[in-house]
Amino acid sequence: MERSRIVGTGHFLPEKIQTNKEIEAFCDTTDEWIVQRTGIRQRHRVAEGEGSSDIAAPATLNALEAAGMEPQDIDLLLCCTTTPDQIVPATACRVQEMIGATNAAAMDLNAACSGFIYGISTADAFIKTGQAKNVAIVGTEVTGNRLSWERRDTAVLFGDGAGAAILTGSENGRGVLTSHLWCDGSGLEMLWYPGGGSKIPVTHDNLDDFDIHAVQMNGQGVFRRAVGDFSGAIEKALDSAGFSIDDVDIMVPHQANTRIINAVAQKVGLPEEKCVVNMDRVGNLIAGSIPVALDEAVRDGRIKEGALVLIAGFGAGLTWGSALIRW
Ligand SMILES: CC(C)(COP(=O)(O)OP(=O)(O)OC[C@H]1O[C@@H](n2cnc3c(N)ncnc32)[C@H](O)[C@@H]1OP(=O)(O)O)[C@@H](O)C(=O)NCCC(=O)NCCS
Image (tube, rainbow, N blue to C red; front, side, top):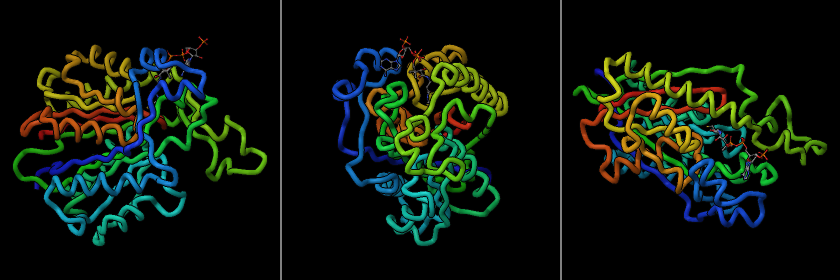
């Protein structure tokens, strides 16, 4: 077997929509500011009581259907999320049960907004080494209940949604050509959620402390790192596979800010019309961003058989990565 190939994609967005205008009613922000500074107009929200598994399961089934496979065909299920249903066990275990993937090992992977790319690289390695035949990756996030509306710089950014891909072995030259991953843990506190883990557990005393129980972000610092590292990741992918930016048919970038996407596209010399952008409708879906955008582009015909597809992302960790895929 030469390489691994994506043979089906799917996604699921909860029905409820939250517009910028609605947020204006309870948060010190405006539709105009959010659109101008981020490109986001609305995001989806799960119903009360729903968690990441509830949207991951339909997204994965959607991808399995596109691949023409049954849940029992999957032997590894990777759930990429920063918003697990619970701390123990992995959300992947619940998704495995919900979809009936009874032959699959299952684990969570937390690489924040780079989660799907870390997932692709992991799936590729499992398939190439023969440890798995068919791998399902699902990026899923329920962000609404992790945000504090007292923190307008982060609260307006994130939405809920899940996207999935099914990978299997390929002998025909198509599939994942390269994948590269990076991490710089010295930037951990540039974007993080400090509370609720083993280091700063939830206590009665810290319950209302937004410095502990809300996403903390150095927006401008993350913005600068994102543009630089994103562009470097793209250049590395092209160099290692022997392509130039002109060979790329379409890029599916992580959806953090349309200004970041435009700056990266300009820096690497990719026309904006070759970039898939859906964050105006869905916001930043963290690990769900790339697979949801990827599936939308597959289903509306922008990604065709034989296309050279570039995916790249950047996020908390700091983590970042890229992959080139011959579709
Ligand atoms: C968060 C981000 C949109 C903020 O945009 P920005 O242009 O950098 O804005 P700044 O942080 O400089 O803030 C500018 C002003 O807007 C205000 N502001 C911040 N959030 C606001 C909001 N939601 N509504 C209205 N005003 C807001 C700030 O308080 C500041 O006001 P001041 O000038 O009176 O102090 C931007 O920095 C960004 O996208 N960073 C990267 C984030 C990211 O990618 N995160 C996820 C990584 S995967």
